[in-house]
Image 1 (cartoon, helix red, strand yellow):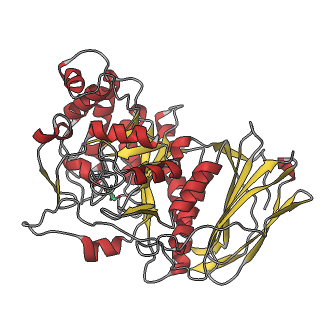
Image 2 (image 1 turned 45 degrees about the horizontal axis):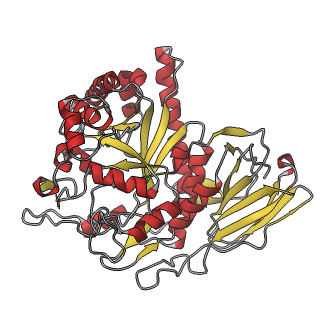
Length: 501
Ligand code: AHR
């Protein structure tokens, strides 16, 4: 492998390390918010969770959904709590109490040090309601709506910068699901109108909810045909899980993510070319993760008319070592596309396919996936660098021949610090990697972290919350402008390099 600062892919935007909080299952209630919990602060937010989210290092947080947003009336979630209505949440067959809403969530974001990314409902609502929310949230002058905001305790506008124009509108499961043509038109109209209120907003139009949707590709083309000049980003969503026990293919999930990103970029650039536009549309990869969706459909899904629970246990996947290795590889894929993926949101944060789990009245703990996110978010600074990588390949059922090693490097020109992130996808072999780092100047290894285990299915659980954690990789050495490191089977590794003093 060769790392050279001349092989710059692009500047890494902090928003690449975003998260996602949806009103879904126990994400809000008994996840981030649990009045009466031993660590709850004066507003009822769990301090143990706040501390873990801070440690994770999350830039933006997308809110309040997800599928939830397509049935959401934002007005329900503001004003005196005791007057807020309980509503059916059709997306997750639950009852939403609206105990936590826009103001409370904004206050929580201040505590965790993240910025709000807000989604408007373009499923069952339209442009007017989106404008009302934008006015309520961002406008400084006095109007009927901003008076309400002030009366509800918020003098200064929330100043929300990034807005999602609905959620997964290509999905037949989505309330208000539309054709690409219909959605593209309403997205364009809404975007134009929103910019009339606040010209500084950044807008995300919905791309495909997976690269394997039957409309994938054509959806992006048609939606952008309508909205190209009105938006800044198109979204991508992708979730991975092993299919039919095929772990080799699962370990290569990032190949699919690479392909997904490349294809959407090409499609967006095609539309730009047809329009003769100089503008580039970037990608907001605002839902990505490992998610055992099959378990959700088999076990979790609720459908009885008399069953609308408040904060049920939904999508509470407990992640293993192999899941975290795939997850770390997905982060490598995002970094490899840092020139065009300028915003991303890990879906989700707490309890719901989250890196953080909580027990009501009990502990909060780090899932295996917590570690690659926290370490990458901390170490990946400056520019992402393309690696010249020569690796053996292995055969996969879903993606053909795939390199056994995947990697990316980053370098901060201001400090001279660099980092390398690597995965070994082999289930049986350690791999010795040798990296030509002469182009980085005199550097030495400052820190190493390898996530691996003899049991690739080991997990952190309520009973054993610290079973899995990354360990230092003592094999990493720098000598004569070459970094060498040994990667155990099914492992994710991060190496921090610093200029030698
Ligand atoms: O993250 C869980 C769900 O996955 C979201 O609500 C939806 O947007 C996607 O299908």
